[in-house]
Image (cartoon, rainbow, N blue to C red; front, side, top):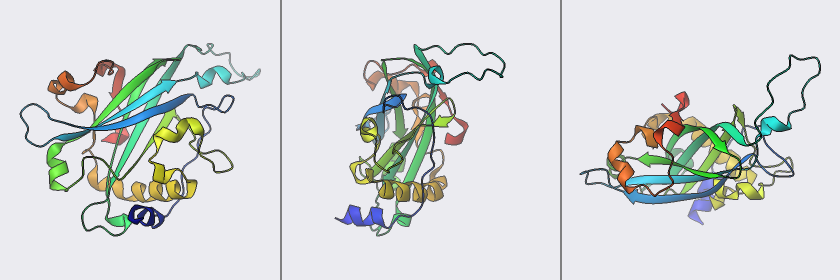
Amino acid sequence: MALSLSVCCLSGQATKGDAGASAGKSAVIVRSINFDPVKIGGQQNPWIRTQVELNANFNPESLTVPDAAATPKKAANKQWVDKIKVTLTLVFKQIGATVASEFAYYRSSATVLTMEVNSSRSVYFYLPGDIVKRDRLKMQPDFYYVQLEVGGTELTLFNEAGRLSPDMMPALHKMLHLKQAYDRARSEADRAVSANNGMLRPQFLVPFSIFDSVPQGSPSPEFIREDASSR
């Protein structure tokens, strides 16, 4: 109940995008989000590792109808989806916080250079253990959501009627499955997240020693690049 009331205290509106719906499906979806405590080298305080598992359904560029008057372009590769930007936002209700403006917000982005259609890939983000201890955070966030972009266009989470797309449900905490709650949470996060810029880190900014404890199948550093907005 307390968490529900806290989300209702948030206010704002979400940004809309047009990329990616074919027969009601998104070009890329979030299959799951998992949180685990991990230790880096000899550090005492465990970090929070977030695994965002993606699945590529189709290349949205292959659905674009060419303009007869425009300069001919190279046909899109239907088997690959390029430039998939993954933005993760974590929201923690700290001890003593009673309203959303007092919550702790952390955000980071990484871009998967390319994914083969009908394949899966995991992108990892890490919140350092010293930050977790300093800010007195739990090992799992109270709220979270993932925004996806393909080729610079944001994929929609909700349809025109304001209903969450079934294939995007894992991208949001269950308390944000209503569009009004999501819009409010995102607006509040957009205002507050700058206070913690650079704290939530994508995998390629974490010491290589961490890779020993990352499950098999995780992406190699060369497939993921930093997005300037995550700095």
